[in-house]
Length: 250
Image 1 (cartoon, rainbow, N blue to C red):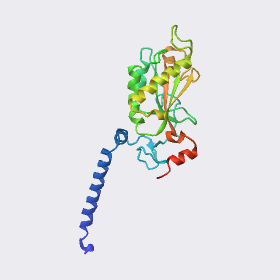
Image 2: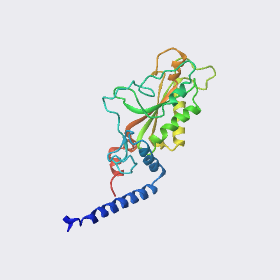
Image 3: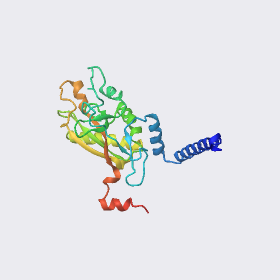
Image 4: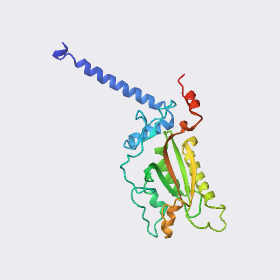
């Protein structure tokens, strides 16, 4: 009978099972936390973003080995090194450097060689340590790409070369860099990024984005760089034995 057109019920049954799977998937998503919902929404908005876990889900998990991680670019990808994109950031004397960086909202590859890390750049005005409105907008474009992941995030502070302005509350560029990192960290925490994922570091004046002497070029050196690292937060807590006990199945 199945060979004479009697298999139509199989098609109908397959459609029914597919509909039920879709229904249960929707119900599962509705029951998840805000971070998971944001991660799912971000995936459907930008499915080509290089976020990936072992199962390709991009969703957080409490089990060892199932936390989503960043898939770093392939070795053959060529970039210009640190900066907001593949091409050099060119500024005219009258152009606001923060506005130029904010016009590139997506994550980009920073640094050549072994430090092929995803991240973004936020500029600061002069010797200021507070985020400007443009700096906040820049970070806000990165937040959806950071939420729902378990990768560590490094905030690296930089300062332009030269003496600080008279009356500066900071004794040296190192203190200034640290203050910039703190401002960035507090903003990301306010936007929902888990603080245990965040790491602060300072380069002072020793990793300038540009060595050009023009003021519009030097403005690019007053910045923080936000990296998404290939390390997972839970893999850096405790000894290997302690982690094995913590993630051991009940």
